[in-house]
Length: 332
Image 1: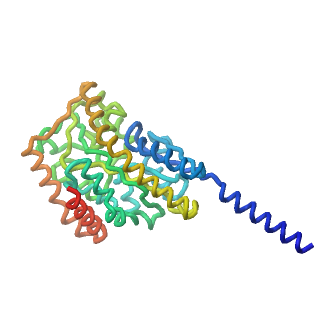
Image 2: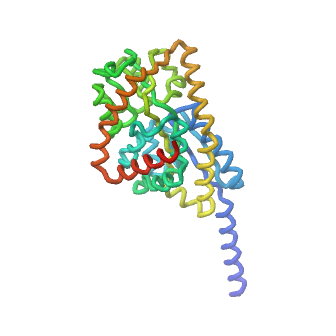
Image 3: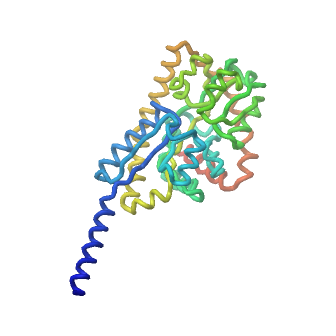
């Protein structure tokens, strides 16, 4: 009788182990944008991880704030109600001040240079602990593209910033202080609230990556879109740590590897998408403004002047900045 009971228990344990091994994990990924780099990355990641895991991990991508506004989805990812989220890095700063390092101006020569930096092994190691104390961690870091400023009064020179109330993608010193230095009045605002604020002229302008302006048809609101020298939007793909651990070592490693592979696969798309976006903007009557060399130099001098004070206030952020700076020099 004992032998039969032992066999039955053993069979039950084996069935439970088999069921656990065959379990399908759903990974919901939220993004505030649509038809852009984050969606292309998600497509590549979904194809890679679902094929490699044999269907054990199923990816569901929700663009255009379908799972809620940015603050709610960031909080949801930290709590584990959403498995991953891909907003601008500035919206994680409330959880972890280190994220503001991505907004340091003047680090990158161009978008391809930023991509090389975020593929650098030493940078990946340095940034791997971002958000860990709050239950999240990066599985990919996307150089989304150059930052642009759309304003009812077009920015054609540094002096044009003065007095303008401008939406910035975050509320930390490196999102706020550079534009205060230029004489603007920066205000942090989630992307979902910005279009109506522009339409109502609650704000004078907004800063975002190129694809935001065409995806949400900002050309119907204002026309003058100015490129901001040496300023890039970085969108880290942040995943819930408990979810990753729940996958088990093998699947967790797969997620990390496929996320990084997808990051590399979309690099060409990212650069070309900025060009396509510019064409769409102009086709809809918009103007692309490039600051003259002298104005671009003056812009960078002013915004970079805030770096010493901000970095000296936090040794960890300075270490992150130093790692990015060193990789930038290695990969120029």
